Amino acid sequence: MIILENVYYKYEPERIEALRGVSLQIREGEHLAIIGPNGSGKTTLIRHLNALLLPASGKITVGGLNTNNPKHQADIRSLVGMVFQNPDNQIVGMTVEEDVAFGPENLRLPTTEIKKRVAESLARVGIAELACRNIENLSGGEKRLVAIAGVLAMRPCYIALDEPTAFLDPAAAKRILDIIDKLNTEGMGIIHITHNMEEAALTQRIVVMNEGRVYLDGTPQDIFEKVVMLREIGMQLPRITEFLIKLKESGFPVRTDIVDMEVALEQIRILTSGIKD
Amino acid sequence: MYHTGSFVKGQSLIYYLDPRLKLAATVCLSVFILWVKPPVVFITGIALFCAALSSGISLRTIGEAVKPLLFFIILILFVHIFFNENESGVPIKNSFPGLSFSLAGLQQGVLVVWRFLCLIMAAVLLTMTTAPSQMIAAIKYFLQPLKKLRAPIDEFAVMIMLSLRLMPILLVEKERIDTAQKARGYNLRRAGFIIKIKSFLSLTRRVLLGVFRRADELALAMESRNFQRGDRASFVELKFTCSDYLVFFFLIFFLIIFVALNSHFG
Image (spheres, rainbow over the protein chains, first blue to last red):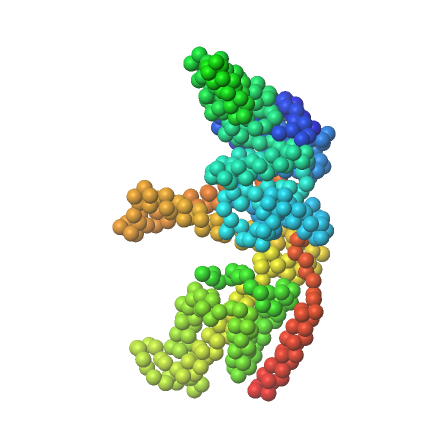
């Protein structure tokens, strides 16, 4: 379990307050989306989860280990893997396998174990065939997968992803989302920053950040029901929810707390069968 | 296109040799090339050339490796031809006022250029057939004794890896800013000298800012993957195989023959 208790953080030297009393609990195996306007503290928040940033006040524990304790930081970083927004700024190695090996090398594992983990991680994200490829010759989507594999090689319990589908074409984005979903099904906790409401709707829980605070926290249905509150901070709804709201506003008796396409179709089927009758 | 010093994938024997053997052999060979007398240095060069061709390195690639250094090669030759005197100290022919063409200078120049080309060939043979990670592992291996003096060998290896990784990013960053300037109608060709200097400084500043920002992010990413000062394990396994021993004894054998030849000519 990751527990954040009243966490504050300021960026020096501008003294910009990025987090203002954030309290959260993230369970193991949970798939959590963090959404919010730019500058709301999403990235700052997830950087606290693997002790890259330390709270100015408040407390964060990961599996009972306090991030403020320097002795725990290496263990915390093995527990919570971090995938940055731009893979080019995260990839260290010249080739795919060299980069994936970077984390296990830091853990001082034997060479045979490192090789085993590299092969295993590349297979998990479906890029085993790219092992010997030069990083410079990969597409944006492939680089993201390399970054995810690099984190998986450290065998974390949680993986925090900062906008993993940003700037990707729909096919590459879907590939990444499928992998995230598969990892979650295997029991890994996922903390996923996104600006895409459809992506957020696929998770179990959404935390909406605004001005360094937790603005809303709940299931996708709970969150997307609070239309006025979301619009107040400039957030949009999933297109399917927007469509159902428009239907309701036009006088059709439909539910508006739906974020899933299949459920929405069912609603429309019921509605049209009523019209036929 | 081949860039001098870059690794090119291949399948020949030399690719599969232990990087420590290749690195040590290249260092010894470089000293040997600078030390031996003319007839032997020419034979060494031809042997190196044959080794390069048999490793699957084409003449074109060798040409591309030499191309960026062509100016220095011509300069070396020019300096020796025109600023050297023959054995008696008398110039053979006055070509230009103040410059004298000397046959001994020409001989000396050709010899120096040949040695230089041999060194380039040895370096190309090493870098082209050894993956950067293997090379770093070999350098780290040879620097191990310095660990006793608390030299940060592991950090040094990571530094080499990062500089090799960041070099292309630096070029991409420069290209990106350059293109952005052109897209806004900026034409440097029509600009005067001062404007060109100003533009260069501005470009340098932006590239550096971008690189520092990336370096900051990279440092965070490395930290998030548990990078700390001190010992690290290695993904690259260094193992001397049968073929390494064979090549090692083969090189020793040739070294003895070449040294004998060198003393014979001396």
